[in-house]
Length: 242
Image 1 (cartoon, one colour):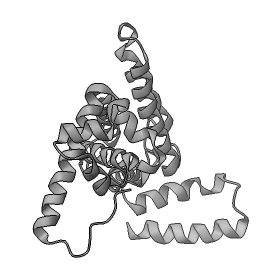
Image 2: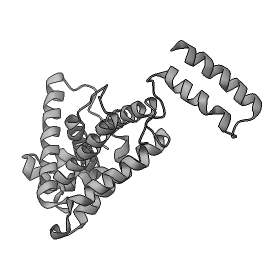
Image 3: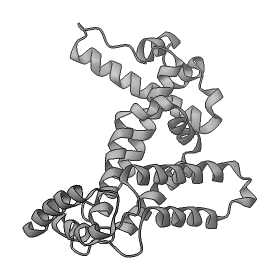
Image 4: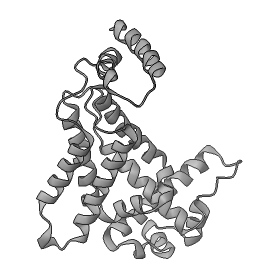
């Protein structure tokens, strides 16, 4: 974890510190991409960035702090590549496109991707969380349209697991065994696991969802009679608003 800057630093000093920090992170990311994680030593990074080794400790605390910063750099880079459509014409194709983008990023940046997703602490990354909000938005649109086969949290877990598994499996294979059909099959397996062929909700919005659930209510046995009657009243009120 990087130490906080001294409280009495001037704006110019802070700007210079941030420029140096960014230069060190880019140098470390370059070493990681070219030579792998073992090459990212404080001495090698200092040489590549044109700074003294003690500067790295002042900026990042230790090597692990530097690697956390490089992972955050990776998440920020990935976030910048995402295309967000708040109202896609086809939400399932939008899901496919998002999955493809994640896999393509991993295949194009193998060492960086492995660092990003190989450390549990990186999931607290602000850029990672911002990316998660984009994915949650995609899943929420699928759910609102009646396309979701499973719960939202499980859908997110399946999407992450299949994308990461696709990247790591592909990277582990010898080049002559890397068949693009593997990636397509994993993506379509994800789509099948997460979505349904026909939307359960014909009309978008809460009223349409309420009508769809209201129609299925008599067939379910999880709730007690009084609970079903209460839920029916709520659904009727929501459906009437549409």
